[in-house]
Length: 85
Image (cartoon, rainbow, N blue to C red; front, side):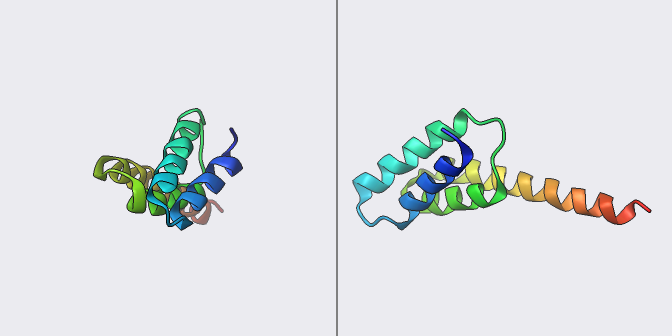
C-alpha cells in the first residue's frame, strides 16, 4: 500500500476504542510501512500515536526513533538552506 493508506491506517488505529481492532489496524499499518522506502513525518507521528495505544514498548521506541530521525533530516535541510547564499 502507499504512504497515504498507511498513514490513514495508523490514524484509524490511534482513534479506535476497540483494542482488538486497534491492534489489528496497527499491525496492518506496520506491515505496509515496512514495504515503503520513505515515509512522511506526519505519517510517523500518526504511527507513534497508534503505537502509544496499541504497540509494544519496542514498537513505540522504533517509531519514535524513526520520527526523530525524519525530523532531524528536515531540520538539517532547512539549516543547510539558511547557509546557502
